[in-house]
Every structure is written in structure tokens, then in C-alpha cells.
Amino acid sequence: MQVSAYLKLSVAVALLTIVLKTAAWWWTGSVSLAADALESLVNLAGAMFALAMVTVAARPPDEDHPFGHHKAEFFSSGFEGVLIIAAGLGILWAAGHRFFDPQPVESLGLGLLLAIVSSALNGALAWAMLRKAREHRSMALEADARHLITDVWTSAGVVVGLVGVMFTSWLWLDPLLAVLVALNILYEGGALVWRSSQGLMDEAMDAESLARVDEVLEGFRHHTVRFDHLVSRSAGQRCFVDLHMHMPSDWSLGRAAAVRASVEQALMSAVPGLRATIQLLPMDVEAHFDDPKDLI
Image (cartoon, rainbow, N blue to C red; front, side, top):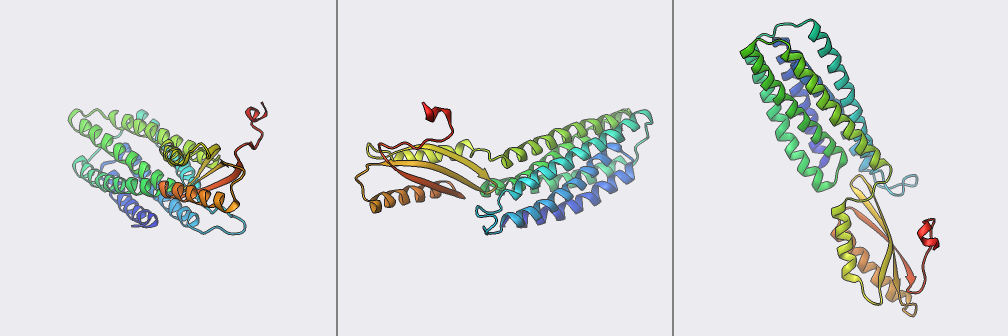
């Protein structure tokens, strides 16, 4: 399945879990189950926006976007993070009112069963989506999967807490659970917004990919060939490296270009989605930039 297919499945599962959790809240009157249902509504909005952004990210480069549209996925992650934070604040508001006006919960057995079924659906989908996200380096898919995982833990906490309400009749446990759910949601939302902001600011490639790049370059290093000024950046499913390759000044242009092509091919084979740009320089020539170290 493609990334977009997983997100379409996420939309369908979100619709189903909204129905299940809303029914559970309606039958029980539990504010913690209402909080759980509200998070599933956020799941739906996030999955729909992620699907739209993945579609944009898949567009080929054009005149206005010569490096492609891959960063659109980071907008999806940031948008979902903002939605999660809004849901968390709404849950805190509702739980605060319930502390001062406790309400009995009813039909907990049926409500808990519906919550468990919806949690199982989210858990299975999140596990599959996370594997696919790592395979395709999709930030949008990973953000949606991690949000679903948060939803699973949220539902698990609600179920455990409501079982406690059944056996103790402590009504304050219900709004307390809602507060804990909201705090967890706020943390997850903040983390997604932070990761999105880092991606939009041209964050370097991850350590594992950089290690693969260095391993490839090590295989080409020789007393006649050296590399320096390597920089990298990530953009959704794509990543880019720029570096200098120094060679003897008496090599022909054809020979130097052939070695460069071999290095670029090896780099792009080692790191899926990589675009490598290598500048050729004679061994005794250095290129200087704005880095103060280059001016020494």
C-alpha cells in the first residue's frame, strides 16, 4: 500500500471510532469518554489534512519549486499538532466544570466495550502506519501514526480509570482522567509542532542517514581524492547533501566527472530519496564561504 492509501484508511477508521466513542459517551455520560471521542475527531481532521499534504508533496518539481514539494508534509504535522493542542484545551475546560458538578456515569460495561474495540482498531492501524512511515520517510504518515498511538494510550487510561469508578463510585475519578488525557494530548501536540518547525527550517539529515553517507565516502577516499564541506538537509521524504570532492589538478575533466558520478550513484543507492550534489575542485584549492573557520 502507498502512503496515501494508509491515510485514506486512517480517515475511514477515524470515522468509525468517532461513532463508537460518541456512542460510548452518550450511553455513559462519562466526560473522560467524551474527551476520548473528541481526540478521535481530531484524528479525522488530521488524517484528512495529511492526505491533502501528501498529495501535494507527491507533485513533481516545477518551475516555481525546482526542488519539489516535499516540505508540504511538515505543514501536515504542524497542523495536526495545533489541532491536538486545541482538543487538549477543550478537554481541560470540560473536565474543570465536571469537578465542580460531578455527574453519575451509567452503562459503563457497554461504554467500555466500545472504547476497547475502537482502541484496538487504532492500535493496529498505528502499528502498520509507523512501519510504512519509516520505510518511506513520510513525516505526515508518522505524525498521524503517533497521534493514533497517543489515542490508544488515552483510551487505555480511560478504560482503567472507569473500571475504578465502577468499583469505588468515586465520581471525581472521571474528570481526573479527562485532565490526564488532556495533558498527554497537549504534550503530543507540542512535540508535533516542534518537529514540524524543525523540518521547515532545513534540519540536517538524521544520524543514521549521515552515517551511511560517511560510510560511502570512506570507500572512495584515497590519497588522490578527499571530501569536505559536507552539508545536508531534510525535506519530507527527500533529503539533500552538498559537498566538495578534491582531485589532482592534472586529471582530465572526463576522468573527474566519471569518479563524481560513481560517488553520487553510490550515495543515492545507500540513502533512499537522497539527492547528492558534488562540486569538483583541484586538490590544492579550497572554496571559502561565510563560515568564520574558512577565513582563518
